[in-house]
Image (cartoon, rainbow, N blue to C red; front, top):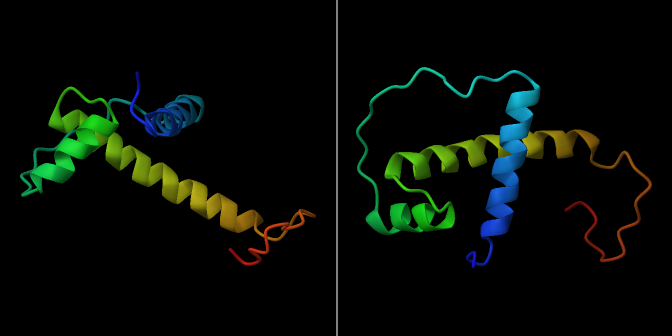
Length: 94
């Protein structure tokens, strides 16, 4: 059974993967070796959330998600206020 919230992470990662396949982004980009000092608890949490087998896989998936979230935010901000959607919850401007 998947952890609570894992399906949302899977969905975002699938959207990222399909977007990159569709628009021709390479999945095999140049790799660089880096050394980081990371908090072990955070790394373990990310590894669990993404069900990653390695630390590198977990970090790559997390970075992919951050990049895609920034792109989605930019796209949503571009269309903000352009529709005829009524905010029934009183969150105007959110």
